[in-house]
Length: 257
Image 1 (cartoon, rainbow, N blue to C red):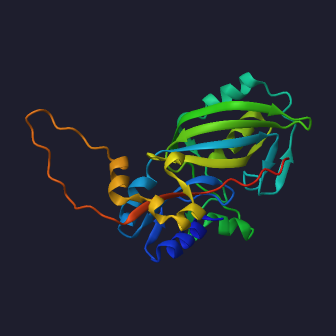
Image 2 (tube, rainbow, N blue to C red):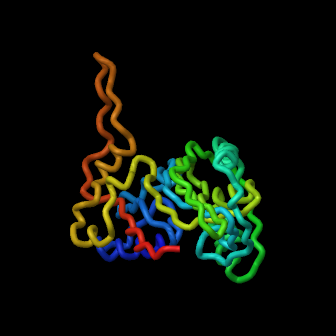
Image 3 (cartoon, helix red, strand yellow):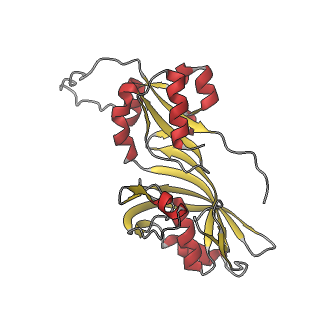
């Protein structure tokens, strides 16, 4: 399911065309996709630029054409010799302020067209590196397979515009064995996390599960307390009953491999 598919379903649920989202999720990804309904679409631009968190699995020892599991395998190199210390060292080099080349199958526009559209038509897509920030890149577990691959379960906190697929690719390249993403789950967008989210089926059955615009704004912009003796500024807008929802697509049933 694509982010556009989620928007389409929310349009049917809330019977309005004024629906948008705050940052595309890859079709293979699951997790938080913040949806704005009617007036709430006006605040989505503020959310697009916020930091995000992800849980992912990186496979070392395989390079693919899309930097994820949906692409064609381009190269296979045994990663059995790669040590945990080497992995930690190369991950450290991918943290902080870095320059990252997005995946060729990203949604970035090149000459007015999406890069992934050009790539699927056989065109060579050369995207420019751009600055991003990785605040946390933690390995939670490492599993070594008999076929020479190493699967890393990781968590990443990063700036908007960071591609986790590109981190997987660059980590594999730095280790000399290649790498790609096998699973991706977005766990947070700004202050919106999985604990505020509901599935699309839940949202269809109980639309009131979504957040009101007031509640969403309070979550995004916590109220500041005024110093003693200084009056609080008057509110700038009345309450709104139109919702903002945080919806996510449920993770697929594991198939192994």
